Length: 333
Ligand SMILES: Cc1cc2nc3c(=O)[nH]c(=O)nc-3n(C[C@H](O)[C@H](O)[C@H](O)COP(=O)(O)O)c2cc1C
Image (spheres, rainbow, N blue to C red):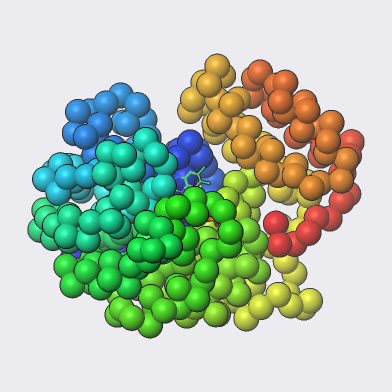
């Protein structure tokens, strides 16, 4: 296997969010690696048009992993081979998606219910892409009565998987309750391969605390990066400084700098998806960014009504020039 480094600070796969434009901007502002959203292994083999759009990575392909989902060892290994041949050197299998539509086909977190099938998939995919960096992203178990993340982690290790991405919630929890990072710590102590922590990483400080507490090899930002792609740079900064320090200027403290990044993201999204689709793709970023921001209520209503990338940009310009021209925002993002 060629030497591949994922770094410590990764953009997690998120369906509907981590398309090419957001991955490109995240890599530009500090993410050391990123993933496509989960891709159907069957759709990929069929050359489904929508699937091919999800894979677009431009020059960032060396820093982009593909995440595949499926329920069949044969199909997943064929898809993994095809992805590797198309240039993806990091291939992840999804064993965590809790969504009914996926679980009822036996894919995503349903794999946790069937460790024998999971082992079969791990073994077949490993054989089909010997030179790839092969990873698995998974949850702690299917429900509270079947918490089996140590078993799954060890199976993965035994079959030569290179790293684990772990979200310590069960499938039945969906996104409820809190991620239990004592489980991440246990997993890290139970396997020799790298473990990356995912779950409730909303700020750079959360990331640093989770890293320190679990001893994980890296951190994945998911919801915490939506509308806030400077979170990666902020994390790298405080991590290098050994913590948030008054002496070390926080990364991207000035509101207008952050808004400029969102304007850049808005432009990337509009040009990639086109005006008729792009404005909706941008909305989760705007909602998240404006959440809790003083005076943003009207702007959030305006986001609701916006029907073009141009209108989205106008909202950001109003915030930048009229509401927060000299404002300093919370450093944590
Ligand atoms: C909108 C959305 C879409 C997601 N899509 C995927 C996906 O395609 N594949 C995956 O492995 N995880 C997916 N996740 C899970 C995240 O990668 C991450 O593990 C989870 O959100 C926990 O991290 P957080 O609490 O810091 O957001 C998704 C999460 C969200 C919020």
